Length: 459
Image (cartoon, rainbow, N blue to C red; front, side):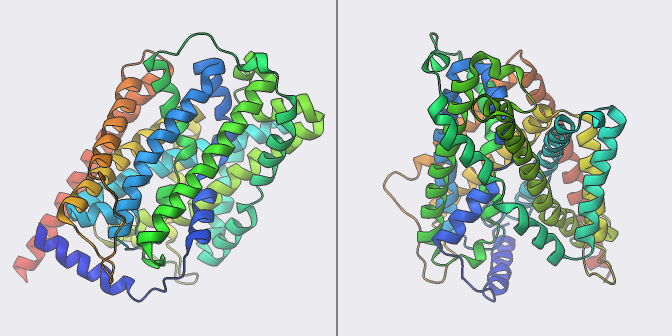
Protein backbone atom coordinates (compact mmCIF):
# COMPACT_ATOMS: atom_id res chain seq x y z
CA UNK A 1 0.00 0.00 0.00
CA UNK A 2 2.75 2.44 0.95
CA UNK A 3 4.72 1.65 -2.24
CA UNK A 4 1.60 2.15 -4.38
CA UNK A 5 0.86 5.46 -2.66
CA UNK A 6 4.46 6.65 -3.17
CA UNK A 7 4.34 5.83 -6.88
CA UNK A 8 0.96 7.55 -7.24
CA UNK A 9 2.28 10.62 -5.40
CA UNK A 10 5.38 10.80 -7.59
CA UNK A 11 3.29 10.56 -10.75
CA UNK A 12 0.93 13.29 -9.51
CA UNK A 13 3.86 15.56 -8.63
CA UNK A 14 5.37 15.14 -12.10
CA UNK A 15 2.10 16.17 -13.71
CA UNK A 16 1.33 19.04 -11.33
CA UNK A 17 4.82 20.53 -11.67
CA UNK A 18 3.82 21.47 -15.23
CA UNK A 19 1.11 23.79 -13.86
CA UNK A 20 1.59 27.49 -13.17
CA UNK A 21 1.25 28.42 -9.49
CA UNK A 22 -0.63 31.66 -10.06
CA UNK A 23 -3.43 31.55 -7.46
CA UNK A 24 -2.79 33.87 -4.52
CA UNK A 25 -4.79 34.81 -1.41
CA UNK A 26 -7.30 37.22 -3.06
CA UNK A 27 -8.10 34.82 -5.92
CA UNK A 28 -8.45 31.73 -3.71
CA UNK A 29 -10.53 33.64 -1.13
CA UNK A 30 -12.89 34.90 -3.85
CA UNK A 31 -13.16 31.40 -5.32
CA UNK A 32 -14.08 29.91 -1.92
CA UNK A 33 -16.72 32.60 -1.26
CA UNK A 34 -18.16 32.14 -4.74
CA UNK A 35 -18.28 28.34 -4.33
CA UNK A 36 -19.82 28.57 -0.84
CA UNK A 37 -22.54 31.23 -1.11
CA UNK A 38 -25.20 29.63 -3.27
CA UNK A 39 -28.91 29.05 -3.55
CA UNK A 40 -29.28 27.33 -0.17
CA UNK A 41 -29.10 30.52 1.87
CA UNK A 42 -32.14 31.87 0.00
CA UNK A 43 -34.36 29.14 1.51
CA UNK A 44 -32.59 27.80 4.61
CA UNK A 45 -33.57 30.67 6.97
CA UNK A 46 -37.16 29.33 6.99
CA UNK A 47 -35.94 25.81 7.84
CA UNK A 48 -33.81 27.23 10.65
CA UNK A 49 -36.81 29.14 12.01
CA UNK A 50 -39.01 26.01 11.91
CA UNK A 51 -36.39 24.01 13.80
CA UNK A 52 -35.09 26.53 16.36
CA UNK A 53 -37.30 29.61 16.10
CA UNK A 54 -35.59 32.85 17.22
CA UNK A 55 -32.66 30.76 18.51
CA UNK A 56 -31.72 29.89 14.89
CA UNK A 57 -28.54 31.97 15.12
CA UNK A 58 -27.17 29.29 17.46
CA UNK A 59 -27.08 26.88 14.53
CA UNK A 60 -24.95 29.37 12.58
CA UNK A 61 -22.56 29.69 15.51
CA UNK A 62 -22.31 25.89 15.83
CA UNK A 63 -21.75 25.52 12.09
CA UNK A 64 -19.08 28.21 12.13
CA UNK A 65 -17.25 26.49 15.02
CA UNK A 66 -17.49 23.13 13.24
CA UNK A 67 -16.28 24.66 9.97
CA UNK A 68 -13.30 26.26 11.77
CA UNK A 69 -12.22 22.75 12.81
CA UNK A 70 -12.88 21.33 9.34
CA UNK A 71 -11.10 24.09 7.42
CA UNK A 72 -8.16 23.94 9.83
CA UNK A 73 -7.78 20.30 8.82
CA UNK A 74 -8.06 21.35 5.17
CA UNK A 75 -5.44 24.06 5.74
CA UNK A 76 -3.02 21.66 7.40
CA UNK A 77 -3.53 18.98 4.74
CA UNK A 78 -3.55 21.52 1.89
CA UNK A 79 -0.23 22.98 2.98
CA UNK A 80 1.28 19.47 2.94
CA UNK A 81 -0.35 18.09 -0.22
CA UNK A 82 -0.24 20.83 -2.84
CA UNK A 83 -1.64 18.64 -5.63
CA UNK A 84 -4.60 19.23 -7.91
CA UNK A 85 -7.66 17.45 -6.51
CA UNK A 86 -8.13 19.15 -3.15
CA UNK A 87 -9.62 16.96 -0.45
CA UNK A 88 -9.47 13.85 -2.63
CA UNK A 89 -5.75 14.32 -3.22
CA UNK A 90 -5.22 14.70 0.54
CA UNK A 91 -7.08 11.45 1.23
CA UNK A 92 -5.34 9.52 -1.54
CA UNK A 93 -1.88 10.61 -0.46
CA UNK A 94 -2.64 9.63 3.14
CA UNK A 95 -4.47 6.33 2.64
CA UNK A 96 -3.90 5.14 -0.92
CA UNK A 97 -5.96 4.81 -4.07
CA UNK A 98 -8.93 2.87 -2.72
CA UNK A 99 -9.77 5.32 0.07
CA UNK A 100 -9.14 8.15 -2.37
CA UNK A 101 -11.64 6.45 -4.68
CA UNK A 102 -14.17 6.28 -1.81
CA UNK A 103 -13.70 10.03 -1.27
CA UNK A 104 -14.38 10.55 -4.98
CA UNK A 105 -17.60 8.53 -4.75
CA UNK A 106 -18.73 10.57 -1.74
CA UNK A 107 -17.97 13.73 -3.71
CA UNK A 108 -20.17 12.49 -6.56
CA UNK A 109 -22.99 11.72 -4.12
CA UNK A 110 -22.56 15.13 -2.48
CA UNK A 111 -22.68 16.90 -5.82
CA UNK A 112 -25.71 14.97 -7.07
CA UNK A 113 -27.71 15.63 -3.91
CA UNK A 114 -26.74 19.31 -3.96
CA UNK A 115 -27.51 20.00 -7.61
CA UNK A 116 -30.81 18.09 -7.46
CA UNK A 117 -31.85 20.08 -4.39
CA UNK A 118 -30.85 23.40 -5.91
CA UNK A 119 -32.82 22.66 -9.09
CA UNK A 120 -35.85 22.35 -6.78
CA UNK A 121 -35.07 25.82 -5.43
CA UNK A 122 -34.74 27.16 -8.97
CA UNK A 123 -38.06 25.68 -10.10
CA UNK A 124 -39.83 26.87 -6.91
CA UNK A 125 -38.56 30.42 -7.53
CA UNK A 126 -39.82 30.33 -11.11
CA UNK A 127 -43.20 28.89 -10.08
CA UNK A 128 -43.72 31.59 -7.42
CA UNK A 129 -43.12 34.26 -10.04
CA UNK A 130 -45.12 32.47 -12.76
CA UNK A 131 -47.84 30.51 -10.88
CA UNK A 132 -49.38 28.75 -13.92
CA UNK A 133 -46.16 26.67 -14.15
CA UNK A 134 -46.87 25.13 -10.73
CA UNK A 135 -48.44 21.84 -11.83
CA UNK A 136 -46.45 18.62 -11.43
CA UNK A 137 -46.12 18.20 -15.19
CA UNK A 138 -44.93 21.77 -15.75
CA UNK A 139 -42.37 21.41 -12.94
CA UNK A 140 -40.95 18.32 -14.64
CA UNK A 141 -40.86 20.15 -17.98
CA UNK A 142 -39.01 23.05 -16.33
CA UNK A 143 -36.45 20.65 -14.83
CA UNK A 144 -35.96 18.96 -18.21
CA UNK A 145 -35.40 22.38 -19.79
CA UNK A 146 -32.84 23.39 -17.13
CA UNK A 147 -30.85 20.17 -17.34
CA UNK A 148 -31.22 19.88 -21.11
CA UNK A 149 -30.03 23.40 -21.86
CA UNK A 150 -27.00 23.08 -19.56
CA UNK A 151 -26.11 19.67 -20.97
CA UNK A 152 -26.25 21.14 -24.48
CA UNK A 153 -24.00 24.06 -23.45
CA UNK A 154 -21.42 21.83 -21.77
CA UNK A 155 -21.40 19.08 -24.39
CA UNK A 156 -20.50 21.75 -26.93
CA UNK A 157 -17.31 22.39 -24.97
CA UNK A 158 -15.85 23.57 -21.69
CA UNK A 159 -15.45 27.18 -22.90
CA UNK A 160 -19.20 27.64 -23.19
CA UNK A 161 -19.74 26.15 -19.74
CA UNK A 162 -17.06 28.30 -18.16
CA UNK A 163 -18.48 31.38 -19.84
CA UNK A 164 -21.93 30.67 -18.43
CA UNK A 165 -20.45 30.29 -14.94
CA UNK A 166 -18.64 33.63 -15.20
CA UNK A 167 -21.83 35.49 -16.14
CA UNK A 168 -23.80 34.41 -13.05
CA UNK A 169 -21.07 34.11 -10.40
CA UNK A 170 -21.27 37.58 -8.87
CA UNK A 171 -24.86 38.44 -9.79
CA UNK A 172 -26.13 36.32 -6.89
CA UNK A 173 -24.40 38.50 -4.28
CA UNK A 174 -26.12 41.77 -5.23
CA UNK A 175 -29.65 40.91 -3.91
CA UNK A 176 -28.20 39.52 -0.67
CA UNK A 177 -26.17 42.67 0.01
CA UNK A 178 -29.20 44.87 -0.71
CA UNK A 179 -31.30 42.67 1.60
CA UNK A 180 -28.79 43.05 4.46
CA UNK A 181 -27.93 46.73 4.05
CA UNK A 182 -31.56 47.88 3.87
CA UNK A 183 -33.26 45.27 6.03
CA UNK A 184 -31.01 45.75 9.05
CA UNK A 185 -32.81 49.06 9.75
CA UNK A 186 -36.21 47.33 9.92
CA UNK A 187 -35.42 44.63 12.49
CA UNK A 188 -37.83 44.36 15.41
CA UNK A 189 -35.90 43.29 18.55
CA UNK A 190 -38.95 41.44 19.92
CA UNK A 191 -38.75 39.01 16.97
CA UNK A 192 -35.26 37.93 18.05
CA UNK A 193 -35.92 37.14 21.71
CA UNK A 194 -36.01 33.52 22.88
CA UNK A 195 -36.56 32.00 26.30
CA UNK A 196 -35.38 28.38 26.37
CA UNK A 197 -32.13 26.83 25.16
CA UNK A 198 -32.88 24.31 22.33
CA UNK A 199 -32.23 20.62 23.01
CA UNK A 200 -29.28 18.90 21.36
CA UNK A 201 -31.40 16.93 18.86
CA UNK A 202 -33.10 20.08 17.56
CA UNK A 203 -29.72 21.75 17.31
CA UNK A 204 -28.33 18.69 15.51
CA UNK A 205 -31.25 18.78 13.04
CA UNK A 206 -30.60 22.46 12.32
CA UNK A 207 -26.83 22.04 11.94
CA UNK A 208 -27.05 19.12 9.50
CA UNK A 209 -29.41 21.18 7.32
CA UNK A 210 -27.32 24.33 7.60
CA UNK A 211 -24.07 22.60 6.65
CA UNK A 212 -25.48 22.72 3.10
CA UNK A 213 -24.92 26.49 3.06
CA UNK A 214 -21.31 26.22 4.28
CA UNK A 215 -19.92 23.49 2.04
CA UNK A 216 -18.11 24.46 -1.14
CA UNK A 217 -14.60 24.92 0.16
CA UNK A 218 -13.75 21.43 -1.10
CA UNK A 219 -14.66 22.50 -4.64
CA UNK A 220 -12.62 25.71 -4.46
CA UNK A 221 -9.56 23.76 -3.27
CA UNK A 222 -9.60 21.46 -6.33
CA UNK A 223 -6.88 23.49 -8.15
CA UNK A 224 -4.44 23.03 -5.22
CA UNK A 225 -1.60 22.31 -7.64
CA UNK A 226 -1.86 25.89 -8.95
CA UNK A 227 -1.82 27.70 -5.59
CA UNK A 228 1.18 29.95 -4.94
CA UNK A 229 2.96 29.25 -1.60
CA UNK A 230 0.20 26.88 -0.32
CA UNK A 231 1.52 26.82 3.28
CA UNK A 232 0.63 30.53 3.51
CA UNK A 233 -2.12 30.97 0.93
CA UNK A 234 -4.44 28.04 1.77
CA UNK A 235 -4.93 28.72 5.51
CA UNK A 236 -5.25 32.50 5.15
CA UNK A 237 -7.72 32.21 2.28
CA UNK A 238 -10.02 29.67 3.89
CA UNK A 239 -10.15 31.49 7.24
CA UNK A 240 -10.81 34.84 5.57
CA UNK A 241 -13.50 33.31 3.36
CA UNK A 242 -15.12 31.56 6.34
CA UNK A 243 -15.29 34.81 8.35
CA UNK A 244 -16.85 36.71 5.43
CA UNK A 245 -19.32 33.93 4.60
CA UNK A 246 -20.42 33.36 8.21
CA UNK A 247 -20.93 37.10 8.75
CA UNK A 248 -23.11 37.37 5.64
CA UNK A 249 -25.15 34.29 6.62
CA UNK A 250 -25.78 35.47 10.17
CA UNK A 251 -26.83 38.92 8.99
CA UNK A 252 -29.25 37.34 6.49
CA UNK A 253 -30.85 35.21 9.22
CA UNK A 254 -30.92 38.22 11.56
CA UNK A 255 -32.76 40.39 9.02
CA UNK A 256 -35.16 37.62 7.96
CA UNK A 257 -36.02 36.66 11.56
CA UNK A 258 -36.07 40.24 12.76
CA UNK A 259 -38.48 41.45 10.09
CA UNK A 260 -40.84 38.46 9.75
CA UNK A 261 -40.65 36.99 13.26
CA UNK A 262 -42.53 33.71 13.75
CA UNK A 263 -44.03 34.07 10.27
CA UNK A 264 -40.62 33.29 8.74
CA UNK A 265 -41.09 29.57 9.31
CA UNK A 266 -44.19 29.44 7.12
CA UNK A 267 -42.45 30.72 3.97
CA UNK A 268 -40.38 27.66 3.09
CA UNK A 269 -40.03 28.35 -0.65
CA UNK A 270 -39.03 32.05 -0.65
CA UNK A 271 -38.40 33.30 2.91
CA UNK A 272 -35.98 36.08 1.95
CA UNK A 273 -38.30 37.39 -0.75
CA UNK A 274 -41.16 37.51 1.79
CA UNK A 275 -38.93 39.32 4.30
CA UNK A 276 -37.74 41.81 1.67
CA UNK A 277 -41.37 42.57 0.81
CA UNK A 278 -41.91 43.93 4.35
CA UNK A 279 -39.36 46.74 3.91
CA UNK A 280 -38.84 47.07 0.15
CA UNK A 281 -42.31 46.21 -1.07
CA UNK A 282 -42.94 44.37 -4.32
CA UNK A 283 -39.61 45.50 -5.77
CA UNK A 284 -37.75 43.81 -2.90
CA UNK A 285 -39.86 40.68 -3.26
CA UNK A 286 -39.06 40.38 -6.96
CA UNK A 287 -35.39 41.23 -6.43
CA UNK A 288 -34.85 38.44 -3.90
CA UNK A 289 -36.97 36.00 -5.91
CA UNK A 290 -34.86 36.74 -8.97
CA UNK A 291 -31.72 36.50 -6.83
CA UNK A 292 -32.69 33.01 -5.67
CA UNK A 293 -33.32 31.93 -9.26
CA UNK A 294 -30.04 33.43 -10.52
CA UNK A 295 -28.06 31.91 -7.65
CA UNK A 296 -29.65 28.49 -8.18
CA UNK A 297 -29.04 28.63 -11.92
CA UNK A 298 -25.45 29.74 -11.32
CA UNK A 299 -24.82 26.82 -8.98
CA UNK A 300 -26.32 24.29 -11.39
CA UNK A 301 -24.35 25.80 -14.29
CA UNK A 302 -21.10 25.49 -12.36
CA UNK A 303 -21.89 21.99 -11.17
CA UNK A 304 -22.79 20.62 -14.60
CA UNK A 305 -19.50 22.07 -15.84
CA UNK A 306 -17.32 20.30 -13.25
CA UNK A 307 -18.93 17.38 -11.43
CA UNK A 308 -19.55 15.04 -14.42
CA UNK A 309 -15.76 14.74 -14.68
CA UNK A 310 -15.96 12.32 -11.74
CA UNK A 311 -18.01 9.90 -13.86
CA UNK A 312 -15.61 10.47 -16.76
CA UNK A 313 -12.63 9.67 -14.51
CA UNK A 314 -14.26 6.48 -13.22
CA UNK A 315 -14.86 5.36 -16.82
CA UNK A 316 -11.30 6.29 -17.80
CA UNK A 317 -9.89 4.28 -14.89
CA UNK A 318 -12.09 1.26 -15.62
CA UNK A 319 -14.20 1.46 -12.46
CA UNK A 320 -17.21 2.07 -14.70
CA UNK A 321 -17.52 0.78 -18.29
CA UNK A 322 -15.11 2.54 -20.64
CA UNK A 323 -17.86 4.21 -22.65
CA UNK A 324 -18.51 6.54 -19.70
CA UNK A 325 -15.15 8.11 -20.65
CA UNK A 326 -16.32 8.75 -24.22
CA UNK A 327 -15.20 12.07 -25.69
CA UNK A 328 -17.35 13.86 -28.26
CA UNK A 329 -15.52 13.60 -31.62
CA UNK A 330 -16.26 17.21 -32.57
CA UNK A 331 -16.50 19.18 -29.32
CA UNK A 332 -13.92 17.11 -27.36
CA UNK A 333 -16.13 17.10 -24.25
CA UNK A 334 -17.02 14.13 -21.95
CA UNK A 335 -20.50 13.91 -23.44
CA UNK A 336 -21.61 10.54 -22.01
CA UNK A 337 -20.50 11.52 -18.50
CA UNK A 338 -22.32 14.87 -18.71
CA UNK A 339 -25.57 13.28 -19.95
CA UNK A 340 -25.38 10.46 -17.36
CA UNK A 341 -24.77 12.89 -14.50
CA UNK A 342 -27.67 15.11 -15.59
CA UNK A 343 -30.06 12.13 -15.90
CA UNK A 344 -29.25 10.92 -12.36
CA UNK A 345 -29.60 14.45 -10.96
CA UNK A 346 -32.93 14.90 -12.77
CA UNK A 347 -34.23 11.63 -11.27
CA UNK A 348 -33.28 12.86 -7.79
CA UNK A 349 -34.84 16.29 -8.43
CA UNK A 350 -38.29 14.88 -9.26
CA UNK A 351 -38.31 12.38 -6.38
CA UNK A 352 -37.08 14.55 -3.48
CA UNK A 353 -37.70 17.89 -1.82
CA UNK A 354 -34.99 20.48 -1.24
CA UNK A 355 -34.61 19.55 2.43
CA UNK A 356 -34.40 15.80 1.72
CA UNK A 357 -31.78 16.34 -0.97
CA UNK A 358 -29.86 18.83 1.18
CA UNK A 359 -29.64 16.28 4.00
CA UNK A 360 -28.49 13.57 1.54
CA UNK A 361 -25.80 15.89 0.21
CA UNK A 362 -24.74 16.86 3.73
CA UNK A 363 -24.49 13.25 4.93
CA UNK A 364 -22.18 12.47 2.01
CA UNK A 365 -20.07 15.60 2.48
CA UNK A 366 -19.70 14.99 6.24
CA UNK A 367 -18.49 11.44 5.52
CA UNK A 368 -16.04 12.92 3.00
CA UNK A 369 -14.91 15.49 5.59
CA UNK A 370 -14.45 12.61 8.05
CA UNK A 371 -11.98 10.98 5.65
CA UNK A 372 -10.17 14.27 5.09
CA UNK A 373 -9.83 14.99 8.81
CA UNK A 374 -8.46 11.49 9.37
CA UNK A 375 -6.07 12.06 6.44
CA UNK A 376 -4.95 15.32 8.04
CA UNK A 377 -4.03 13.51 11.26
CA UNK A 378 -2.13 10.86 9.28
CA UNK A 379 -0.24 13.45 7.17
CA UNK A 380 0.87 15.26 10.33
CA UNK A 381 1.91 12.05 12.09
CA UNK A 382 3.95 10.94 9.07
CA UNK A 383 5.13 14.50 8.36
CA UNK A 384 4.30 14.15 4.66
CA UNK A 385 5.06 17.23 2.53
CA UNK A 386 4.78 17.37 -1.25
CA UNK A 387 5.77 21.00 -1.84
CA UNK A 388 9.26 21.53 -3.22
CA UNK A 389 10.40 23.79 -0.39
CA UNK A 390 9.01 21.44 2.27
CA UNK A 391 7.01 24.19 3.97
CA UNK A 392 3.81 23.40 5.88
CA UNK A 393 1.19 25.10 8.03
CA UNK A 394 2.13 24.34 11.66
CA UNK A 395 1.02 25.55 15.08
CA UNK A 396 1.22 24.18 18.65
CA UNK A 397 -1.31 21.46 19.43
CA UNK A 398 -2.43 21.00 15.83
CA UNK A 399 -2.55 17.21 16.28
CA UNK A 400 -5.71 17.57 18.40
CA UNK A 401 -7.65 19.50 15.71
CA UNK A 402 -8.43 16.48 13.47
CA UNK A 403 -9.57 14.52 16.52
CA UNK A 404 -11.96 17.31 17.56
CA UNK A 405 -13.21 17.67 13.97
CA UNK A 406 -13.96 13.94 13.74
CA UNK A 407 -15.79 14.08 17.08
CA UNK A 408 -17.94 17.01 15.85
CA UNK A 409 -18.86 15.16 12.63
CA UNK A 410 -19.87 12.07 14.59
CA UNK A 411 -21.92 14.26 16.97
CA UNK A 412 -23.79 15.97 14.11
CA UNK A 413 -24.57 12.67 12.38
CA UNK A 414 -25.47 10.99 15.67
CA UNK A 415 -27.81 13.71 16.91
CA UNK A 416 -29.60 13.96 13.58
CA UNK A 417 -29.80 10.18 13.10
CA UNK A 418 -31.55 9.59 16.43
CA UNK A 419 -33.94 12.51 16.02
CA UNK A 420 -37.62 11.66 15.50
CA UNK A 421 -38.10 14.64 13.18
CA UNK A 422 -38.27 14.58 9.39
CA UNK A 423 -34.62 15.67 9.30
CA UNK A 424 -33.72 12.62 11.39
CA UNK A 425 -35.59 10.35 8.98
CA UNK A 426 -33.86 12.00 6.02
CA UNK A 427 -30.48 11.59 7.73
CA UNK A 428 -31.04 7.89 8.28
CA UNK A 429 -32.16 7.51 4.68
CA UNK A 430 -29.07 9.42 3.53
CA UNK A 431 -26.76 7.18 5.54
CA UNK A 432 -28.42 4.07 4.10
CA UNK A 433 -28.13 5.37 0.54
CA UNK A 434 -24.49 6.36 1.07
CA UNK A 435 -23.74 2.88 2.43
CA UNK A 436 -25.41 1.20 -0.56
CA UNK A 437 -23.57 3.42 -3.05
CA UNK A 438 -20.21 2.79 -1.35
CA UNK A 439 -20.76 -0.99 -1.29
CA UNK A 440 -21.63 -1.06 -5.01
CA UNK A 441 -18.70 1.24 -5.83
CA UNK A 442 -16.32 -0.91 -3.79
CA UNK A 443 -17.44 -4.06 -5.61
CA UNK A 444 -16.79 -2.32 -8.94
CA UNK A 445 -13.38 -1.20 -7.69
CA UNK A 446 -12.40 -4.72 -6.63
CA UNK A 447 -13.62 -6.15 -9.95
CA UNK A 448 -11.56 -3.58 -11.84
CA UNK A 449 -8.45 -4.51 -9.86
CA UNK A 450 -9.11 -8.21 -10.41
CA UNK A 451 -9.60 -7.80 -14.17
CA UNK A 452 -6.51 -5.61 -14.45
CA UNK A 453 -4.43 -8.11 -12.47
CA UNK A 454 -5.70 -11.03 -14.61
CA UNK A 455 -4.86 -9.08 -17.77
CA UNK A 456 -1.29 -8.48 -16.59
CA UNK A 457 -0.92 -12.15 -15.62
CA UNK A 458 -2.11 -13.31 -19.04
CA UNK A 459 0.22 -10.86 -20.75
